[in-house]
Structures are given as C-alpha cells and as structure tokens.
Image (tube, rainbow, N blue to C red; front, side):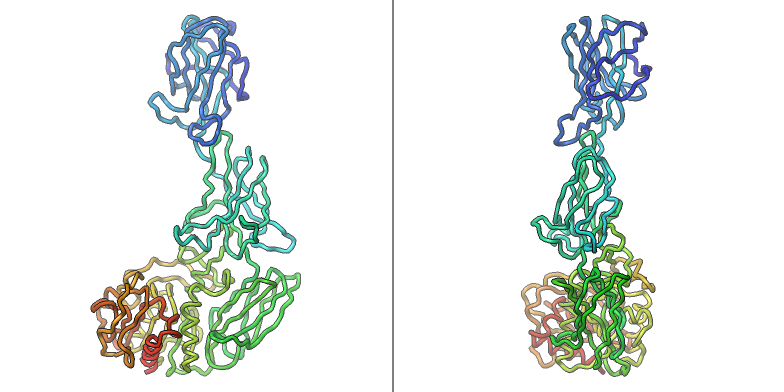
Length: 600
C-alpha cells in the first residue's frame, strides 16, 4: 500500500460519525459499500488513567463481503500503524478495529490528528475515512491566574475567588499548600485544604478553611488546580519546589495582623515608627523590654477607612537594649523586636550587633503573589519594609538573641547596640578602631560585602569580635535602600578565612578545653556538657593562632578563640549557646569571660 494518499475535504465529527464516505482511487463516484462508520472518540490518550477510552475505535458494515485492510495515517497521509492487512468481513456484520496510539514498532506516536485508511481487496479500492481523531498524551498545564483578594481577610470578602486558565470540560479540583512552613521530614509544602469548582467554569470560591473546617492560620499559601482535558489526561497539581518558578499568581497570604519594625536602632526617648497591618480593624499595642514582662507603654488604635497610618510611639528611655512591640487585634496578635540605642555611646562598651539582614532575609513573606516566600534562602530579592510573618518574631530570635540580651541585662553588662543593616548603611555606632569589642548576637547568615570587609579590617587592626551564631558570616548580599538582592552561596570559609564544618551531632562526650592561653574556662571545670549539636572549625585562617579551644577531642575545636593580625576572633559554635545561658552556670561563666575580652 502506498505511504501517502490524497484525502478529500474532511471535518471534525462527533464521536459516533455515521454515513462516512470514501474517496476511491479507481472510481471516484462509486456507490458507498461501507456503511454505518463510527470512528472515535474525538480525542483520546493512551496514557491517561481513570478514563473509559484509552483507545480509538473504528467500526463499520460492508454492503458486500470483502477482505479488508485498515491503517492509521497522519495528517500528511503517512501510515503510522497497520492495524490489519487482510481480514474477511461478512456483509451486514459490524466489524471493529482498535488502535492504542502506538506505531508498528510499539512506540507512542506524537500528539496530533489522525485518520483511518480502509482498503477493500475484492473491490480494488482504498480510501480515507472522512473524519479524524486527536491523539493527546500530554498532561494539561493549567495555571492559577489570580486569587482575590491576595491577602485575606479583607473587609467585604468572606471568601476568596480563584480564577484559573486551562481545560474546563470537567469539574476542577483545587489544592491548597502552605509554603512558609514546609514539612520538616520532606522539606515539601504541606497540603492543608482542597475544594472543588464547577464544570465549565474558570472560577471557584473558597471559604479559606482547612480540611478540618477551622480557619486557616497566618501564613503563605499556594493554590494548585487539577483538571482533565478532553482526552482524559490529568494535570499535576503538586506544588513547585520552594526555590522554583511558578506560572500565574496562585499565592494567598493569610494575615490577621502584621507589623514592620524599624531595622536601625531608635534613639531612646525619640519616636519610633511601625507599619501595622491589622486589616483595618482596631488593635491594642504594648511595649516591653526583652526579658521583662512589665509593659512600659501601651495604647489602642482604631483605623479609619482611608489608607492605614503608621504607628508612631516614643522609644523607652534608659540604657540600650532590645524591646518588643506586641500588637493584638481581637484574638490575633503579633510581637516584633526593635533596637533602642542611646546618644551617649562609649567606645569602652562592647557593641552588640543584631543580625537584622538575616531576620529580613529569612522572613517568609510572599511579595509577588506566586505563593512562594521571598527569602534569601530561596535566592529571591527581599524588600525591606515588610511585616514580620506569622508570630512576628524573626526566625531564631527566641533561641538566640532574646536569651542573650536577657542574660546581659540580668548580669548588669552595659553595651551599645546597633544592627548589621545600620552598619551597612553607615547609620549609628561605627566599627572604628577605638571600639574595643563587637558581639554578633545571633546567626548572621548574610552581610553586605562592604561590611564583611570592614569587619575583617577591624579585627586585623586590633579589634575583637565574638560571633555566637552558626552557619554565619559566609554569605554576601547587596543591601539597597529598599531591598536585599543578589545573595551569594555559602563560601567555604567565613569572612575571617576560617573553614567550618556543617552543624552536626556533638555526641555524648562533653566539650573539653584543651588550649587555654586565653583561658575562657577560668573558674569552671573546663568542660561543657549537654550540647546536642555543634559546629566545628575545620581550618584556621592562614595567619590565625589558637589561644583557646574546647571540643569533643583535641584538634576538633568547637568553642574557639584565635588571634588574627592584631585582633581576636571568638566563636562559640553551639546553636544552643544563648538559650543555655540561664540554666548552665558554666556557659554563663564562659560568656562573662568572653565579655571581659570584648571590654578590654
């Protein structure tokens, strides 16, 4: 049989196409002897699951008995599959032939439109059935075009309206995933709800409730849609990777109250400005110092219908420190930290640096409505004026900065205070040579390149720096006036040139001091116990000299002090360090010794 045959005009028919006729090669106007032709369905998928039709079927009756051949041809007329070459069909008896969408070699043929070619040996005719079917083995890729409102709740909206683009021949199913708090076991977003749309509609409404019927809590959510196309293929409704790209705008932020605090210290007694989003509902606020439960100021705000106004309060007077602003609107509340400094700074006091760049870099807020948090971990730009998500406390604040600052206050240790963002922007106390010591209070994952260079020069010129964080001082970021951008991957060494092992299990053995020229363990038994995880220093900077070290074994330093140039660097290497200052007397004593080094 020839590989290419000219076809007459054809049109799309229903699944059951009756009375199809032939184009005869030998006699163009011969009377039809093939009758009752059915060729369908219109579209089918050989790989679709859960569908009735995974094959195409051709059936017909002959007016006179004959030996038939049946083939499937593409739009150019090329044969892609020979179903039968010689099969006797009795007159008046319906004959059926099925095609599974594969070629003679068993391979799935490309998506496209196909027709059937029938040959009658006794009649000496071959012809193409008028009508065609579509083979479609590709899953649809629907996209959520919009979620309105993108931030919920909103006055006048009791539900959200979801608009999607994609096949609408069957009822769509929507799935809701929380992306700012992934499953710790898998690292994937957790599915929290599902709802159905109406067949034929590109819109659906959802009451923003979880699978158990409760209201959805504050967070970032991504909505996907599962649809079937006309061929029966089903779309993939799983969420993308957290560091991937997203089609459309499937994001929904649930926020009942949020606060964006200042990222530079406020001078004691002067005005501090906070941007509060209470969804235009009244809210109460109160201020207290970290480590204290006594409110120092409080008030109530009733927003109007116009654009929200910032909350302006007077920063507490007194020594430098970190304060907490608590905002409550009905049953919802959030608490954010902010730094308060003093005009009377002293180079004799250590400078405590809060890692606000890291606070913002890890703040899981969806800025572009794609359902994925904009964080530096996800290598995405981060705006600076954003409300702190969920509870308001930055990631790690309750375990690192808060207990450290409470310890310093209890011990009566005075300090000056700034943030790494303020240092990067040249605001407030500076890293000048007269400053005796600097304490980096928590995990400083990202620093601007300029600040990293100044910190190293400060140490080499005689300054003293203690870093209480882990996985710190190894990444750079561009600090702009409005955003953080271009975060780098972690370097093999920190900014001082020390190589660090990943944070891992410490084992059950205590950390024992084995180098004591600086003797940070003076007045203790020389060992630390009960620390489950630690970060070992694998290599010193090329010009570094160890003066104090403790670890699970000699040569495996965790708590480490070394000379670099004329200065000193101290690393604790313990994620639990600050949290243990209240309950571990050895840690408290070592912290006092570290403080003494920073105060010299």
